[in-house]
Amino acid sequence: MIIQVENPVVEVHDLTVSYDRKPVLWGIDLTLPAGSLVGVIGPNGAGKSTLIKAMMDLLPAGSGYVRIFDKPIAEVRNRISYVPQRESVDWDFPASVFDVVLMGSYGKLGLFKRPRQADKDAAMDALQKVGMQSFANRQISQLSGGQQQRVFLARALAQNADIYFMDEPFAGVDIATETAIIELLRTMREQGKTVIVVHHDLQSATEYFDWVVLLNMRLVASGPADQVLTQQLLEQTYGGKLTVLTKVGELLRKQEFPARES
Ligand SMILES: Nc1ncnc2c1ncn2[C@@H]1O[C@H](COP(=O)(O)OP(=O)(O)OP(=O)(O)O)[C@@H](O)[C@H]1O
Ligand SMILES: [Mg+2]
Image (cartoon, rainbow, N blue to C red; front, side, top):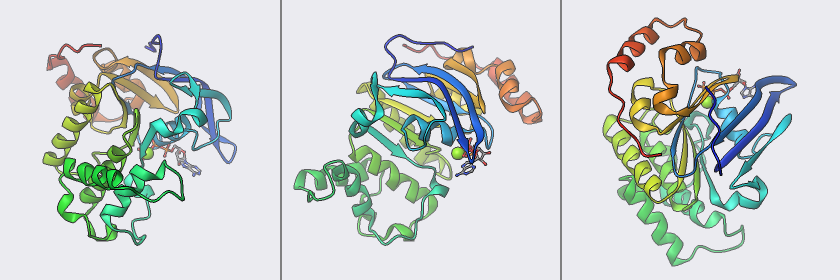
């Protein structure tokens, strides 16, 4: 089940990515629709983080290519924002919460530009959206994991990009924060932005995403969430080994998929 779209916001063609000559992604071909919430789902080590890094050209492709907005990444870099997986970030660097977010908004202006009042306002606004404004002057290293995650989200929001890549933004956040974040992502979608989210929870995936990419080193599926999140395709993705999948399958079967606009 690999559905291609016309006028895609992201086009991945025959992408292979290796670390130390060992391929971890093989021949990925997919297109993603603009203005959608996309979930990238698969087991640990499936290559989800690798795929979104390769989509942003942060990792060299062994073969194949990626185009965003029908252009090479280098030409659209300032329209792209990235929230890395929390474990991959060194949280000990000395910077305040406010500075981390501010770097998001004026970073794209270039190294030597000083932030203007508008950038500072955008940073504060983004912090407010994730409920972290009262932590603005705190060192980033002194926050809890979930709070750090929210600050990184605020940083991405302050960038005001057109396409967002988020690597497990819900990992380690509480349920209230998760609900607040998904509301934010929906608002962004309404503004026509595309948000690509690496996600682990299969149950909420049916509710959160319009489009789902199932990955396990190879592309298992890419298409509308209700067509992709099936027992059979999930078993293909997870190898059918996990008994928990049976339970998820039952849940999925019982669940009415809400109708979505494309
Ligand atoms: N820098 C690296 N050098 C060598 N191998 C790597 C590197 N980064 C990732 N890998 C390997 O590539 C494969 C895919 O890793 P990746 O981080 O993309 O998986 P993932 O789907 O994001 O997993 P997780 O759910 O645990 O975050 C794994 O086997 C991993 O060990
Ligand atoms: Mg990962």
